Length: 412
Ligand code: HGY
Ligand code: MN
Ligand code: MN
Ligand code: MN
View 1: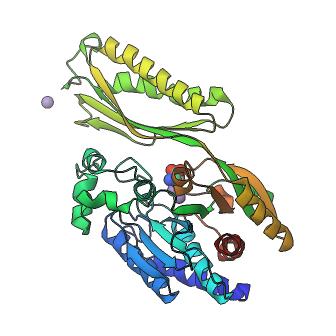
View 2: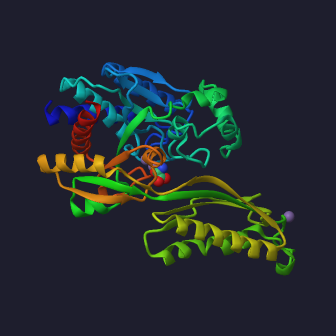
View 3: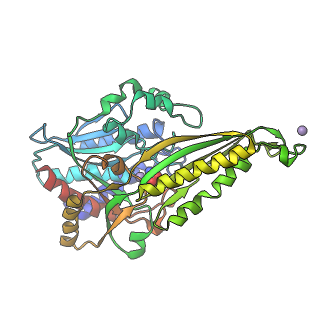
């Protein structure tokens, strides 16, 4: 197949998928178990069927297309990425990897490859964790790491649990265990994804070979004080939840900076209750997202947050909760798989660079136990998780050619 044809298909598919957003004109908002998610899944399903794959949607909301191999018992080769997005995000994060995986299946068929083992193209559900504060729901369910209790535990800001959202979407959360793949049935996983950072674009490099992905811990911290009149309550008689919380929040970024090794910490969400300008806040909740290639750094910052909360909240006379929403350790990716694609880059004279991923991905979840690799495509100006996120269709086409060459080696 000519590369122009591949570019045309990738462009057609991603242009089509752009419309499945809850915030048209203000970026992509495609949260799990919503109308927009259903529309994207239906379109991915139609692409998979058009490519001649055997398609099903599993108990976790993943959409999976299989190119059948001769030996149904052999571990499969899986490629894909997530179809959900953040709020007001970009049109490429995740979904482009699902489109590229289907494109790889097309290329395997066009090459006349007779796979010995299945090739699976996957659109994963709820990688971002945007709605419930968690993450890697679909890929985690495939590994058997999500159960009914997990679905009941985590709720969105409207108080709707994953369990209820799944039911409203038409899935049976009691059957979440059915999404688990048999031990050893996934032999390799590859994810094509946008870099979401500045390196490739700034250096004019076409492809990123990702050799490791940072670990992540996410928390929702809730500080409890007491509501009082903002005018009549003396400063030394207050139990001001915002005062205590912000004394902790203001320290967290510096604790990450001190590590001076790429460790990052982000307070992405802060909310006060009841939220009146003339009411001393009785509650202040905030999220913390800590990432590092070095897990000890993450644990150290988490420890320091807890110690600071103990000190400041005790001083204020209130209480706090620090709810863990996600803990996942850093992962080293498969050099065997990456070396194959490095050779393909050289043969095609595609410039490339090895680099770590500061973003989490389904590959972070699956790579915990299964040989995994990632290909990055440059992000214009390094921007992502915002409406201006942009990558070139021609770069996705290049990545899908490299991925198809790896897939051809692995499935035969
Ligand atoms: O948060 C992340 O790093 C990814 O985009 N889910
Ligand atoms: Mn993302
Ligand atoms: Mn992503
Ligand atoms: Mn009044």
